[in-house]
Length: 118
Image (cartoon, rainbow, N blue to C red; front, side, top):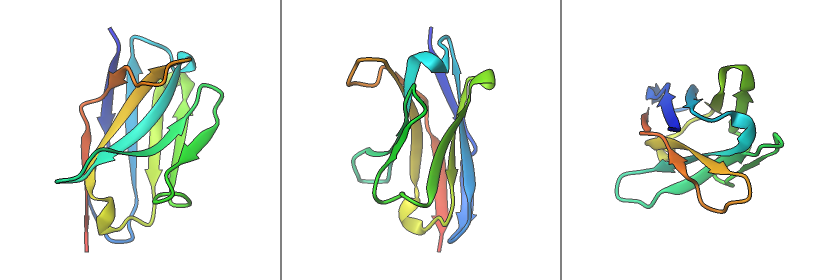
């Protein structure tokens, strides 16, 4: 059984930083593309970024230059480093895993709340 567990969320001031972690169990990172998504109150879930099996990354325009996704294969963990946070980044953040060759994400974490105060 594959499980994803996020951590690292919290309350931060405008302009601050946070690093989210997503620990994957039941499958190795090398077999998954790993995405980060977020959902703000009253809004649809939106794509934040992805780190592919190859290590390549892509980001949403709204976070490009501020957020960085990385991974530590020895710990089967993916990170989302978030800098220059602003209140519009307030949301529940989710990590998700997608098996190679598929378009949809199979595996989802429970989410972690990020709140940026103005």
